[in-house]
Length: 204
Length: 253
Image (tube, rainbow over all chains, first blue to last red; front, side, top):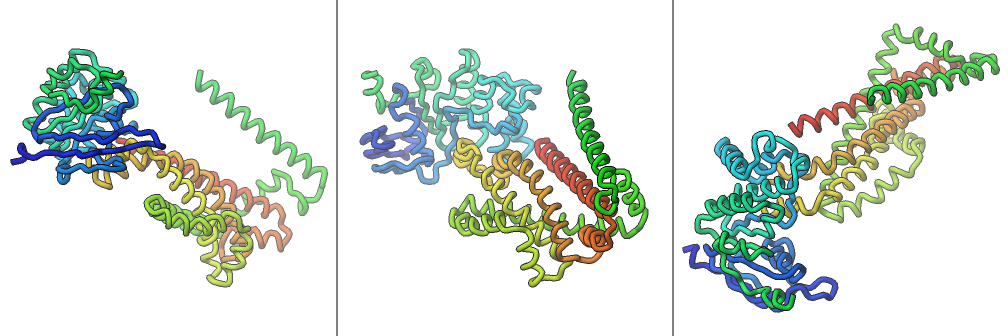
């Protein structure tokens, strides 16, 4: 049933200090599908995602079908709590249980964070390690829509492949919306490119 | 290397204290009357004369308890009201005049007013509360407002429950502000608390002893009680800051 539902965006508009960022954006996402968005920097991709996540309000237009959808996200910035360890950051969003903890440890291990790294404060980890923690965190929370905003930046090819494989396993028919600058990630994510910001790519 | 530097710093601090003790001694010798200015040695003798008496410890205990009560009450209310004010600007707007008033009004005015409203035994609690509250309230509010908005957005997206949000996001943000404000506020609590005792004369307090020493012209005892107040303030500050640091470490573990 949920697979037939859609998120419909109509005439979305957003501007900052008179500078239009989104102008009459229309889109439809079928739940259960995987989508990718590409476009040059500053064309409004992140603004669009922020509106979808409810972090900002649009100036005009409507979004239908987002009600009651559980979101999860890998943000453009890692947004980890600096005083917590890698494992604590991941568990912060998850339900408290030993099974969850084991799952978190397994996921972190799969992305190359050993026991020592898992118990380190995140602000002592490298940028790439922090990015992996942010990816695992997004997979620890129950979600219907997973949003990835340049989630693999700073990762080498092998780690990126591991991260995508893990995301692929966790998605299990749920919706993915990924912003990327790397066209090579599209087939790996099995995502279809939405031409929302294509004009900006062509112009850029 | 670091320990040598610390030792060097401590030595310098000690030398500075010795320097001022020598100046005090010379000044006392020059004045020549202990009733006007007792020497450091005479002060120390007075202190040793007072210390074995049970009344000495009773006075220190009662003063400590009153000021600690005022401090704790102020800390609790500051955290509570600053949390409300950060969520609702109207609360902050309402509290601002009171905070400014408490900051600017002389302690003596509050003490005299408070003497009309309450028994003198409650005075140090009330006065130290009044002095501490604005400092801690401002610090906690500032800490909450400086909390990383990106982390708050993350918490919103991940639907993190409030108690976890407080522990993982707000507490680490507020802690440095609270810690440095607590250090300042403790000194204020002591100074204002003792001043309130001197004016209100609640029984068996350090302030009352100071007043009695002044009336009886036992200046050496007045100096000794002042030294006690300073020492107690330093010890209380160290203990509270140590507890705060310990709490912060335990929280992380």
